Image 1 (tube, protein in one colour):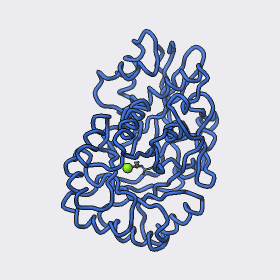
Image 2 (tube, protein in one colour):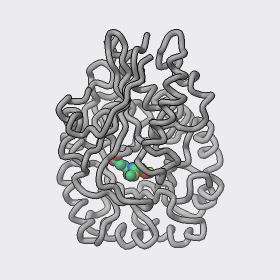
Image 3 (tube, protein in one colour):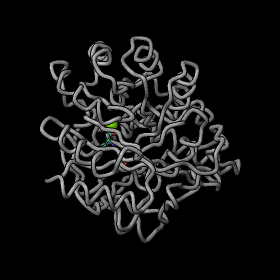
Amino acid sequence: MKLTRIELHWVRLPLVAPFRTSFGVEYDREALLVKAVTPDVVGWGECVALPQPLYSAEYVDGAADALIRFLVPAVSALPDVTAAAVGAALTAVKGHPMAKAALEIAILDAQLRQANMPLADYLGAVRPAVPSGVSVGIMASIPELLDAVDGYLAAGYQRIKLKIQPGWDVAPVRAVREHLGDAVPLQVDANGAYTLADAVHLARLDPFELLMIEQPLVEDDLRGHAALARRLRTPICLDESVTSPARAVEAIESGAAAVINIKPGRVGGYLQARRIHDICAAHGVPVWVGGMLETGIGRAANLALAALPNFSLVGDVSASDRFFARDITPPITMRDGWIEVPTGPGIGVEPDDAALKEASVRSEWIDL
Ligand code: SMG
Ligand code: MG
């Protein structure tokens, strides 16, 4: 395939409500979209970096800079641009997995549109629809949290994830568990806000039958997670810590992770995500697809990934209206707790021109 141009589109979408985590609060989604233009088709990808380097080291403008200065030039030097070749062409550049993932999926989308093949088929999907879970931010009060959770359950979400941090953990989890009863699948995510010294405190979550506690400790502390796992009954899921297939193996073999949250952006792309999926399957470790408040572009691609066989746990892939009044693609909708995997070629969706224009902050073109 020949690439003629890469376009970067900065967009800003207001959130329907602020989303608070242990590391910050988002009021809108500032995102970066990558468009791969070929003589025949175009492909789209979403870079999931946040505007500030608080979830991981990457941030929107840093990712854009890496794309413009290093990643796009490396790909444009390829004699034949294919998604399978992109990963190898980018390995010389250290880090920047979210920027790399966005470029790779934009190219893959174009390639699959040309071949008239859905991303789900290309990845090896086995389900036409995936169950939908929702991640619920830290709130100002427990009544406000219970209201929000009630709303999501009424909408049909099959699993609730509560964001926690020191000072917002045992009490809200107890309140939600008592309010909902034992049947509702419930889990928590700390985004690395605790230390091993909090082990006794975190063990107070054990009675609430959580599916898992996600990323309790900082990203680089696999040994700490393994030690914590020995002191908790609640299984530990790793998100930020798992940045590559090698890290996945290490996390599993060290006992640091019983479950893994796979985010294509965090691991450098959908092909790496699939490799980690396969490794986890071989180790008997269940996985689920995480979310980064994606627009419909990233959400559609995540649905294809979530349809692979070892994505046996409910992921953070919710409907567009969980976050946005107006998505930049036709809205991704959930029915009775399920979202259909797109069936069109490539990622199966494209931005709506008017919606993209409304959300647009600025764009830059790189002619090749
Ligand atoms: O897209 O549904 C979503 C968000 C899910 O909680 C979510 N993501 O650590 O898993 C996580 C967070 C990262 C983004 S927080 C701004
Ligand atoms: Mg997480």
